[in-house]
Image (cartoon, rainbow, N blue to C red; front, side, top):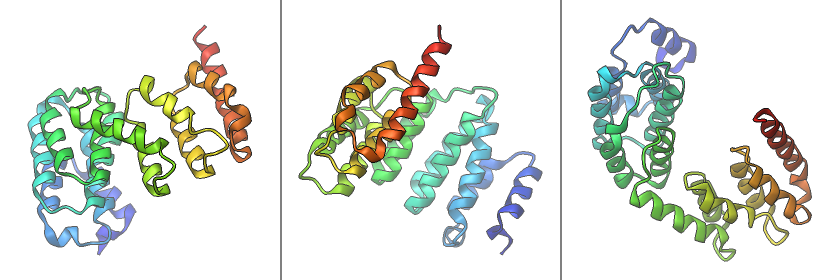
Amino acid sequence: TDGGHVWTRRAAWSALPSGELQLLQELLRDGAFRGQSFAADTLKELADLAGARFTTANAEGMKDMLRVLRQTETPEAQSVAVLQGLQAGLRRNRDGAVASDWTTDLETLATDGTPAVKRSVWSLQQQLDLPASPSQQAAVRAAATTAADRSKPMPERLNAIQMLALGDSSETTPVLLNRLQGAEPLDIQRAALRILGEPTDVAIARGLLERWRNIHPALQHDVVLLLLLVRASDRAKE
């Protein structure tokens, strides 16, 4: 069908003057649509549009959409697509609309969701500067323990490192820096460095320099680039 073609969908979104939240809710309720191979991409694009156009005037419509997302049997990949699209759209929102009253709906969605949905919800909350819920704080603490436990399976540790991106940097940075040592596999070091590289922090740069000899040779080029980025950022603040 035409819905499977990205350019057809983009043309449709461009021609849509309003009502993106209502359309998103209708698609989420449509079991036949959710079975289409292009459903996740479509939902993500529409959620992106809804986030970019969000204003306080349609706050209730957004809350209704979040409730529908929770109540319908939406596959994990599609739920994550909606949340990621919404996050991307809100990032571009020119009105800088604040969604502080979404806290309850988002936390309920996280409580009922899979680990991937939880991470997507908490990432959105972090972007919106909403306070971390008790369940999120507990998940980050558990992730810190798992990330440091070399007896755990690699996939479990890698997922835990991803979760640390959603925690307080003052607590998670030491855990991530300690993964940059010779006894840790390359994949673990790479994942930790990827999270550490998101903020340009002088303290992180200092920690990287202290561990330089223990960092896997395959990652040292990336570390140099990160250090240069931190230096440039620090100079720009002077």
